[in-house]
Image 1 (tube, helix red, strand yellow):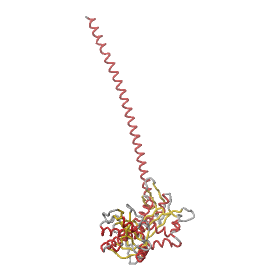
Image 2: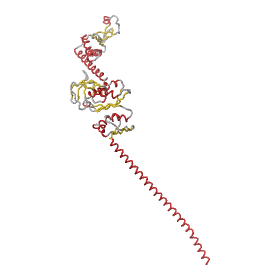
Image 3: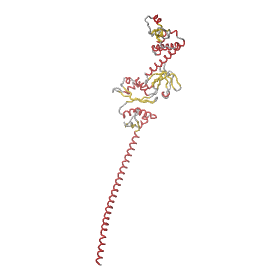
Length: 418
């Protein structure tokens, strides 16, 4: 049995599996073998000596006067023969030697042990890489599996670098060592599944954290990072110590630090800029390496208008709009970039529109004034007509009132003549 202990010690050293766990699995497997041989093993106990590896199998039997079930009971006489202290109702441990197990039981025990070893191997691998989730590891390229790449993370664990997580245009050679970001570790029936990436923005972040001592001790903070894998990365940094230049710390002496990371990323460009609370200054820094004339930011709308020199317009926008796009993602602002000439033209156009608008307003005011004067004149004329009409009505009323009197006078004259 000493050979068994030596084998378990070797297994613990190579696989990282606790020896006690394997011994417990052996005890359980032998107990399962007892059940297969004897049909029931509810009263069977298996013990394995942790130092020597010796295995003892006992059957617990109750001391009775008359034995009805030999598998569960023992007579008082046999119990006394083993030890004089036993009395009726006591539990006696009767040893069952392992050689009594059949070949099938031994095979069953072996399969249980193998299964337990596999489960422990999976658990050890899962626990090991679960602690490294959201971190970087170094892998060795094994081979291409279609468009995916098989990468060895250590002597016993492989991961598959999917095409969607590869940098466009990147080609790997067997035995090449590459840096990978562990996105997620999942536990499956076939063992742990480790999702790795070369395109994740946090890959660059973790590389800087390991390369730059000032980031490790918290003097320099990475505020935000955006990336178009294989092409360009923009990273905003901030220093908690006014005596430490955050950009200089990340670049290193003669660019040693940043160049080491660029080499790991196969030549990807990295722009390191100063983070600032003022959105105008931050946006100006984010558009590096282009120069900026002015920035007008609307904090509520999260939008900004940027004016750059005419000869810097293409540099500010970048190839296929990449520089402006990354700056917008880094700052969180919608950025509208214009050249100085465009800004001047728009300002002139706006000024002309304002002047035209003012002229139209003056004209409208004049027209309104003329209209008002005309309306006042019409109102005055209407009032005069109203007065004339009133006078005519009064004259008419007077005439009507005078006509009856004359008739009465004429009638009176006639009466007198008669």
